[in-house]
Image (cartoon, rainbow, N blue to C red; front, top):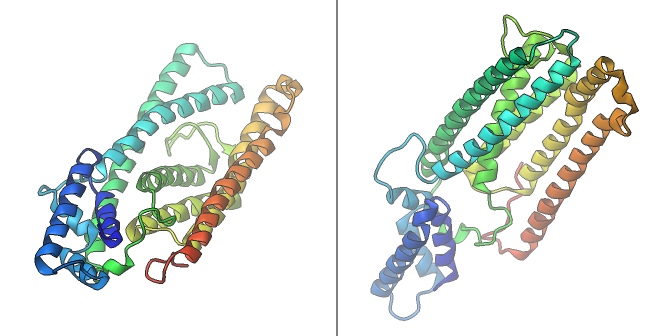
Amino acid sequence: MSELIERYVHQVGRYLPEKERAEIEAELRSQIQDQLDDRFSGSPSQAEVAAALAELGDPRRMAASYSGERYLVGPALYPFMMTVLRYGWVLIPVVVIALNVVGALMSPEDSTVIGLLFGAIFSVLQSVFIFSAVVVLIFAVVERSGVEMQMKAQSFNPLELPPVDDPGAVDRLEAAFGVAMGTFVGLVGLYFWQVGGLTLRFNLSDPGEVIPVPSGWLAVTILATLGMVILHLWALRRNRWGLGSWLAQSALELAGAISLYFVLFKPVMDRLMTANPDLRTIPFLGTGAEIITLVMVGITLASNGFKLLRLWRGRGGQSAATHVTVDG
């Protein structure tokens, strides 16, 4: 089996539901081989294989042909969407409840347990609803832009198919999760901008107690988050990362991690210490904001640096037809 055929089948498989992928890939390999046997005697050349694959068309179009129905979110993205939703349905309640506890500790007013409980339940339901709506909307947009718009792009050239182990390949789950969560975080950031700081009550007419934060750093956080959303959408549409786009992604993640120190970690920690002076006696808690920020920056540098190294090495090991593009 030609290596070019394997690259084509692999790309088609990336847009198929996991439970059907192996069967459809086997069927597609057999179909391509039958066509080559019928048209060319002996062993076909790479140019002949490329010509046959070009007639089959773009891998996304081929994958879409195996599903005759139309969906708001198609079968290729639906499992990823549900995975993102499940993560969010577990993570968001935990985060919201923790924030409510922190808010109660920082508030100078005494609150009843029943009041805190009902407030936490309302906040959880509201946050989960907004998160779910944003995720479905984002995946619906990705479904349209990732399939229909890409199919209208330039003609498909089989010789430009990336290798199966391409280091620039986009992890669709990771990218889609980044788009969904980034959009949600960006909306929350815009709400904080509107009310003038951090608050646990999502109500423009009555935001409750607001913790002031530097507006400049809040703007950096919002812009960095929205920039990462755009980059993930761009990567999903192009179906690959390049050195330029991954460098931009790394820079935005670093800017976001640093800005969070000024708009989240430090203001919350300062308010917590002011409301509860006894906490200052706990070792390292006074520098908790700095420690969290340094850990985030370290993780970002390590993970993104490893990916950049793989992309750089991939440029040297691939032919001109399949090299990793340095995009901007």
